[in-house]
Length: 149
Image (cartoon, rainbow, N blue to C red; front, side, top):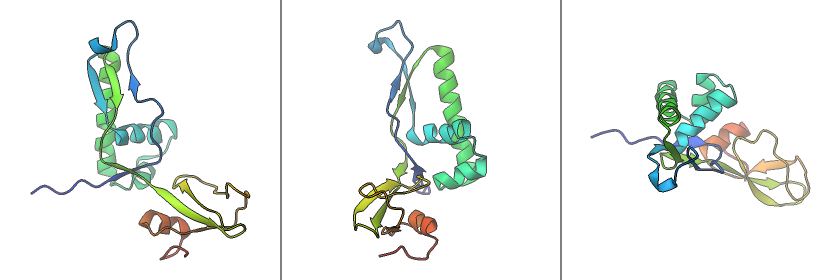
């Protein structure tokens, strides 16, 4: 029996999910499917410039798994460009990790992406916030064994 696939953490979903060469009708396009986590791997490595270990840590996967994902992503992207095929971004085994916070100043409860570096209350802009989530990725952010409640 194969091992279950581990969910890959992504920090955002793309605004645009379909790219195609110009000059042809969309129904004439052969499509290549790029998984959401494959796009995230390219974003972290090629745009943010992180090393493989940092990328793997952000996605909550091993370095070897990260390398397999990014190799496949680059192969698909290069194939689409060289062969003039459409690229559709969808599917995969991913999760968007969102942290829940409470503002100590005004009591507002809100959510922000895990990756956001500086979190401020959207209501009063206070930096006096507390994590109220219980996910393992939030615990790492808080630096505590259990998140604040």
